[in-house]
Image (cartoon, rainbow, N blue to C red; front, side, top):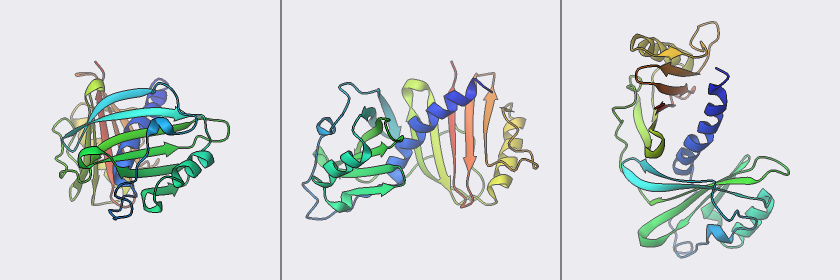
Length: 235
C-alpha cells in the first residue's frame, strides 16, 4: 500500500484535473468575449518546457493535455489574466483558477491553475477542445457504473494505458455504493488495497488491484450520487 499511495497522489492531479477543466469551466458565449485570447507562453514566470505533454481522448475526441508551471504567484497570474480576458472567462474556486477563451477553428482554450501555497509554483493544466463535447459512451475497459447512473465524461490516456469515467445519478449513499461495487469487483478477481468498503470504516473510495492482467483501479463516490472510476493497466 505504501507504494500505491504516491502513485495515487500523482494520478489524482493528472487525471482529475483534466476532468475539472471540462466540468467546472466559466465559458459564456458573448459578443464582447468572442475575440479575446492570450497565450500560455505569455504568462509571467512560465517554465520554458512543460512538465508533461500527452494525448488524451475525451468523450471520443482526441486532444492534447499539457501541464506546466509558473513561478509567479496566483495573485500575479490572476491580475495578468484579468487585464486581458473578460470576467466571464475567469473563475476562482478556493486554490484554483479556471480560464476559458476562444482558440482557432472554433475550439476553446481551457486552463486550470492550481495554487500549491506560498513559495510554491502554480501548476497549470491546458486543454484545447471543441466548445461542445459528444455524449459520453462508457468504455468497456471500465467496470459497469452503478444502477441509475448516467455517464458524464470519459477520458482515455493512451500513453499510460489508462481510462477514466465519471458518472452521476447513482442510487444509494457513497458508503453503500462502495460496498456494492467492492463486492462485484472482488467476485471479478480484484483485491481491495485498504479495506475502505468495510461497514465499520464507512469509506467512500478505494484502490483495487488485479494480477491478471496487472491493473490498478481507483473508485470514488460522493453523497450527491456522483462517482468516478480510473483504471490503469500496469504492464
